[in-house]
Image (tube, rainbow over all chains, first blue to last red; front, side, top):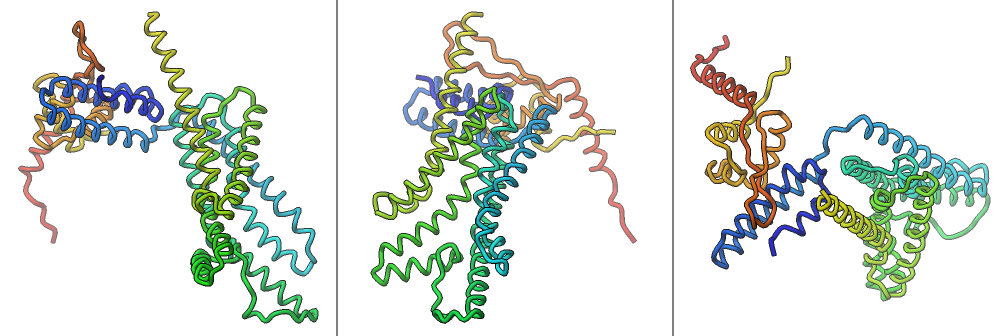
Length: 324
Length: 101
């Protein structure tokens, strides 16, 4: 068997047809020629090692290189960006406005800030999912997919900043103000020093300290709850990338069908998030696995769909070539 | 005016190709460490986009297995750029250093 076939298949998913023909295939051809010419076992092993390293390097360069954007791609990107922004706003407003009205007037603004800080990390991935579904047409080029993934990665970074720094501070500030207002109305509860923070109010360092404290105190269930909260902050931030990869491979001509795909992906993510939490709190799943379960499942499904689609199209190309 | 640019790697490739048509791996071998096999095809692809080199796949012999290799040769434009670059390099090597007061 000639070496390099698997790498060739991998490259067909990552690189454009032009790059595949000009850059990857010549590198694989060199490896195959050298391998066929090698007469000793150690020489063949050396050829395979150096050849594979070179080809992986070539594929990695292709994967991170984004070609200049064509007019069609620019139009698609602008449309996806507008749709994502609009969906982010609608979802963000819905998630913020509805719970805000359950609070008294004095705290409404602070409560809104606190809820907004929690709504943004949810609205970002949902906005990305529906934005890509509605904004991009059925035919997504490799270059366009790379740019969309870079955009999703940027959105994930923004999400992470909110989850790690903004959300705990906003939540804490709201709780302190609520407590102050309650005291001014005659509430005689526990003193400020004994006030227990919830995991959404804690910074990453405080969450780590709480996990260590409860583990040492012989409270494994509470420690697991805090540890799960810690992992979930990072996994929730990565949701944009998981949604983007899923929706970039699930393409359909009708916009409504693509919207349906986005909705199904969101529901699956939500179900898996709760399954992961339930499993890890009861010890059936490792904590990082439980927290990352929805991202892992969505990205794995996206890879499987992309692979099966690519093998189908390469079979089609092969039969077309044979027919010619 | 958009002047053509030539990096040191591109210059090396053009200099090696000015003699004969070569495969990528031959270029790596003849450069004596100047070119790496992981990046030579990326550079050759970029040079093809710029119009410095052109390529064709090798002719397949009966019973040949595996993918066909690609042969590269410089274009007339590439050779002109190489000559201009070498002339500029010679000129700057000869010119005296400018001293600032």
